[in-house]
Image 1 (cartoon, rainbow, N blue to C red):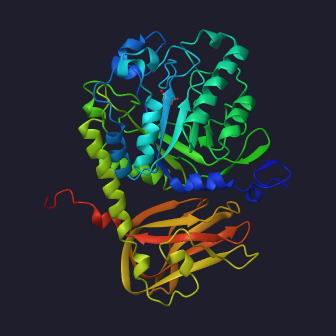
Image 2 (cartoon, rainbow, N blue to C red; image 1 turned 60 degrees about the vertical axis):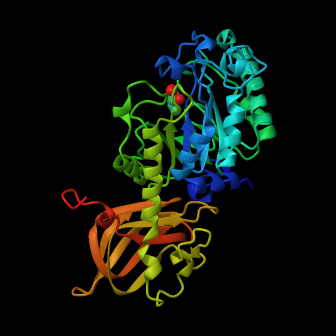
Image 3 (cartoon, protein in one colour; image 1 turned 135 degrees about the vertical axis):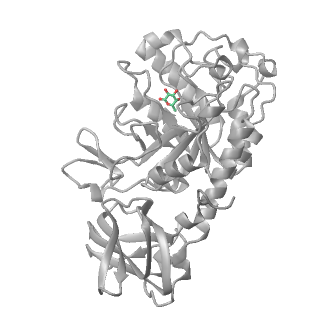
Length: 446
Ligand code: FUL
């Protein structure tokens, strides 16, 4: 029996399991999507396909500089836009001359895709590509069958020549009304890349491996389940939230400093994406020199440093030894998980401290390899004067990672109360933090 795909009505969402490559991808949590093409030189977001290849000429192209900053941000992989909607190809494809081959950059001998893939791996980042289906340059686009052949041939090159691809980004923009042979496209990809996560809007075709969140604001607005039905077709489709580092801009633009997002905005995005069980895909754009602007580098470094600092003070690691039996959920190690008794539908994990601790965030991770099972939970503290458990947060989905924020509380006993699960609950991590105390006070000393 296949457990990754099922017709609705035969299985329930709790029966559907992720593929191993989806689990591995969800563990990456945070990736970067890179936009760098003719648009970079023309102050454009969407090229119309008429730009001359001669405009593509970065004089200080240095993907190592990009990757160092991206690695420092905490991202684990990059997806390069190998062809955006304007049709210009960043690798010397054999399918068209509308590519770097016809540009003055490196006298037409360059290969951005190859250079970026190498730099990414040098910095320990996985690599993936975006190949826009919508193509405003290629004349064959008007003929669906001919264009499918063209697109497939491009994909064959990318899938065979640049090593393992962690994610293949299928963008639905501009494609309304156009028919693509996605069955063939995914067959081509899978022949060479069995473990690539295919990202696609659920509207584009039925069997994407990851789905679009529905906005580019960097926010998951709902209880987030991994198993989503499309036309009676249940499948594990974790959600990815893509949002650019500069407000509303995926490509670099001159005199655009004001659009750079603040560190607070990025942390808020992190909590509303990764902290709601989603993948965060942050847009980063090299400038027309072929370098990331200094301000972007600085912001990426600050973001990574802040994430690392936040992760340092997990109060649960300083608990009393009496929280016996739950170690695997309380050890700070997401590679171990605690399991409730087989067949149970309700469970509690309690953490006891020697002295009362103050905290304002909880971070919980569900072990998903066997499916997403927790459907209702609460975080509670023991009130000594009243002798009752008081609820400080509650929700339905936990999923890969859930960050709950609440007004600061102080307690000696805390519990994760799993109120309902469709099979025994499995918890990789339950952590508590006092992140409010880490923030510089507005009027405090600088
Ligand atoms: C969108 C595109 O239209 C934007 O230009 C950008 O590439 C973004 C990541 O996806 O659908």
